[in-house]
Length: 241
Ligand SMILES: [Zn+2]
Ligand SMILES: [Zn+2]
Image (cartoon, rainbow, N blue to C red; front, top):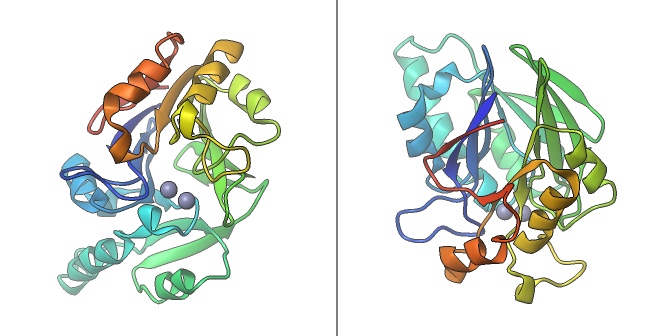
């Protein structure tokens, strides 16, 4: 398995950047996760969006869903021309918020709700979802195929059991939005420094994402410099699991 970073910023991108969006590639599976601002155009550069096995959304904050409506328009245009074989499988948690009604009204998604502990299969890749710590309902997942597994934390502060979960996978993509000086216990995101420590404790490759654009790239790179297995992701790059 490998994953490609389409967008790595939150809650808004810098000029020319994109908020959360990724592509997970298995042997036969192509799974997008998150569809934030600016992600659709980058997804379309990476593959035909209609060829995705599924799209996974961790939670309904706009930096993770803002290009969903645009993707729906794209699928609609294919359908009108008779080129759409089937609706796109959209996997997300159920949440009591107006954004969910808007998404439910988008005609070209086949919506599948998941919650903590649920497992789903997408073309040979198994996704197992778990609850994380964020102000709204939010699910991370572990994707497994053969002897490889990949953890995506979604948006979260460090949560109970995170170390064991990271220790159980081949690679992890973690929310490390805050620099150590910005981090407060009980906030919506972890610090990049805590992600680096997790890589040191577990010996697992940890990739840090969900950067705050105003912090500048260098501060993040500096904050994780002591952890050789920890990297700050780059948009457009592909990483092996
Ligand atoms: Zn976010
Ligand atoms: Zn969020």
